[in-house]
Structures are given as C-alpha cells and as structure tokens.
Image 1 (tube, rainbow, N blue to C red):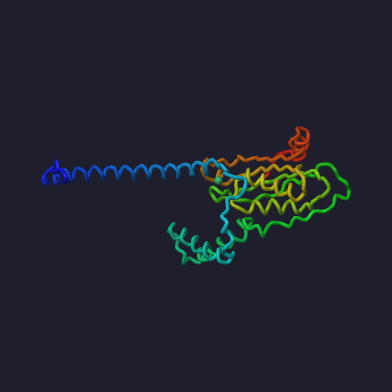
Image 2 (image 1 turned 90 degrees about the vertical axis):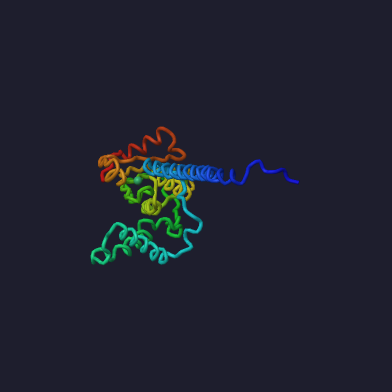
Length: 260
Ligand SMILES: [Zn+2]
C-alpha cells in the first residue's frame, strides 16, 4: 500500500502556480542562453567577414553546386534580386529598374561568378621548352577583377606571375586566363593567390611558380573604413622562389608600384 501523501490537495493547489512559474522561468532562461549562443556565432561570422579572414585554400563549395543548370540558376537568382530590390522599396515597374533582376542574375552566373564552374577552367596545354630557356619568366600587370566573398563588392588589381620552366612552357595568355578563371568567384585575395600558383604548378609540373597580387578592395575603399588609397598585397612563392635571391629577382622585375 502507498504511504499517504505528505501534502493535502489544498496545499498542492497552492503550490502548483509556484512550481509552474519556476519551470517557466527555467525554460525562458534556456531560450535566452540558446539565443545568446546564436548571436555570438553571428557576431563571429560578422568579424570574420569584416577582417577578411579566409577559412580554406579551396573555394567553399557544396557538392550539389552544379545540379541546377546555369539557366535554372539565372531564373532563381532573378527572383532573389527582385526580392532584395522590392524589400529596399524600389519600384520595379519603373522602366529603368525592370530589367535589373535579370541583368544581375545573368552577370552573376555567366560573368563575375562564372569561375565557380570547373568546366570553365582553361585547358591545361603546355609546349616543349624548345629554346631551353632556363631563366625566370615573368608575366606582370595581369588585370584582376574579382569579388570579395565577404561583401560581394569588387576587388580590382594586378597579378604578377613568374615561373622557371623545367621542360615545358605555357602560352602567355594562358596565365591571364588562369588568373581570370579563379578571380571570377567570390574570393579572398590570399586564396586567389594560392589557387593561381597551385594551378600553374600542376600545369607546368614544377614547384617553381610565384604570384604577387596587389589589389584594391571596394569594401575597404568605398564603405566601412573608406580608405581610398590603401591596397592589399599578397604573395605565394613556390619551390626555388623561396630562395632569397630568386625571390628578389622576381620582385625587382615587377617593381611594385601598381597603378589602377
Ligand atoms: Zn570585403
């Protein structure tokens, strides 16, 4: 037989609201803590973006990135751009704005983010180094038009590339095309520099490749700190370019005073 309860029904009725309030309070506190955790993560992401911290040398891309065709992507992005513009209060029936969602969607997929698609990577054709040219080859002032992945604003600058052939050479315009391919992605300048070097190392089958990029980030120049004069220099030196003299020779050739 169960022992008789220590509380009378009247007492339980009195206690019930107190117990319920206590439980609700704990529940509310749990929600507040959870929200604080989310806010913190959001803050972290904001800091990562403002400080332009990249998280990997590979472009963070999902495996299902190319399930949808370019045409399907343009249709979806068109609606997204329209939504942004409408939220901002713009009148999309105005003749000047009518075509903007479609124009932006096409530009994203076909142009400024076209380099996300591996199918658009320039073909890796090389030639035999017939002249047995064993010195450094430098291609400087290659125009870079990219997009900062933290603000989706332009990065504009110059890339300077050098390599020492170990038997094969690439056409000069191939270097421009490789730069352009990796630039046409949401980017972090450090990653762009490394991706260019890695690709050329693979194409030329040598570690002896270097790249320096000097670029202006419109997210720094036109908003935020609004520093119109500053530019960012990044470099990646592979193989022989890690040697002090080889590196010096390359840097002397490019005499870094990039004009924009
Ligand atoms: Zn930025």
